[in-house]
Length: 412
Ligand SMILES: [Zn+2]
Image (cartoon, rainbow, N blue to C red):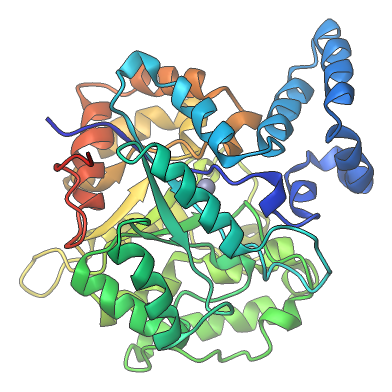
């Protein structure tokens, strides 16, 4: 019987994140006071005091945010991991967790005193050594950190000795997934069937410096010039982002340029068997477009609905009617915190895409919405007809399986 896996979680601590990271996670009313508020909340006694007053006044939004800071500022990744694991006690002891590491060393040109990627990875690896059959970290990759054969050698060493089990991309921190520096890594990942996970919603973290730093060239180089039609559409979109002050002057929206699902088409055109998961299925805002305002769509800069775009890529057929990209998956992490997405998910689980939809939560980013135990409960009760079991056990097992790791053989 395949085991249940949470395919999308994070255990990095505030120590690994740039000083400006938590500022992005603050509710918008607090924007102006972000630095002060962060310094303030990092003191445990201060959090306790605020919690006391917030609960007396019934301010649940503030309480949840404090909870988020509390997890994010815990001192070790092991503490963060075990606090997540505890929420799964009801499912039995053998739940597996994929923890996505994230390279946050290139998010701005501002100085930051955070622990760099190698420290974050070393700590994740040490925690894994304590939970060898429960914690499966993915490797946070950024083409500005290492490129080509150097990047491949670095990643391969960690994945070959089974310290890491997949690759995590987070393009909105300032790179395109079709960056030629990633070419050799994709080539190897496709051959070895090593899973790649990428962030795909219009929100989340992003490059906080100026757009001209990360987009100096309106025709950025591509690993697949042969995908001329796809690249042409991408370059046209870049042109629209460049022309509008809304996207060019505010990297919160501008960095959507890197995240767009279409950016993977040149990659998949070259590596059609690549195992790739679009995290968050495009986001609850794109799944429920009638309920959310989408400024880029309203301004005519980018009208695509990312949820529809992901479904389109997953469902593409070749000339003989066979699926073109059978290894493209989507996960429901974070998105699952919105109750209104479940009717859609139940419908999708009755379509040919059902075998490629994965369960994950996005702990601890989601602590701002609900506790992990509440999210899990909401998910298992709102998904019908064994859909949870299929998403969380059978599908995640298929996704995790590579030539290097067989998820059906337990680690001793
Ligand atoms: Zn995430």
